[in-house]
Image 1 (spheres, rainbow, N blue to C red):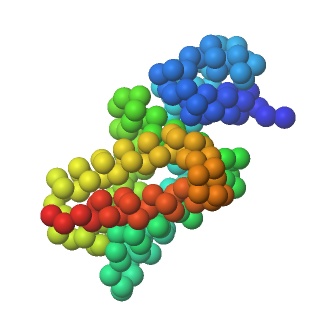
Image 2 (cartoon, rainbow, N blue to C red):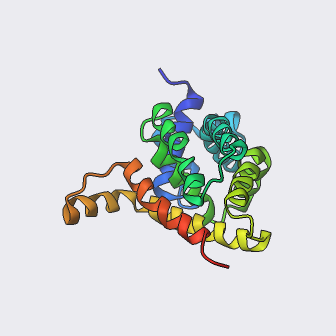
Amino acid sequence: MNSTKEKILNAAEQLFADNGFNGTSLREITSQADVNLAAVNYHFGSKKELIKAVMSRYMDELSPILEEALVELINSDQQPDLNDVFTVFLAPLLSLNEFRENGTSIFLQLLGRGYTDSQGFLRWFMTTRYPGVIERFVSAVHKAYPELTAEQMFWRLHFTMGTIVFTMSSSEALMDIAQNDFNKNLDIAGVIKQVIPYIAAGVGAPL
């Protein structure tokens, strides 16, 4: 049987992914988790801390695997291209499906919610608690495209995040369209593989 803390996290992550951080109340979370508000306050203290805990559950699992993959790419004697850099994310992200059912989709939806819901504290939390992922990712992009300035990299990675957020927020609809219009049976890995060449080309656009 799940502990009270686990029940709260499980309910919160699904509601946050489906309805957003702003669109989900603590009352809805406690109702779905079948706990009282005092339990949320006892285990997490506030809604902000609960949001952090939901994201940390995934990032604690993802960041070591992703950092290792990025370090291997950075230290390689071969010159990577940007498609290589973004492809590095595929296996670590898909490993979240082994950690939690539909973990990849839920995590990417949650990540997107952090941007679309203007959760500035969450972006600060992610960059300060998991700086290694961001630093190594930037290093990998720089190795593949050293001519990019810091400002150009900021804008291009910002646009990349927007593309990923939009894609993942509509991933189920995209899979249905692929099946109905093109007779392609895609899973979440297939959707990610579709978007990788697009974002790699965008980041790698001529200066």
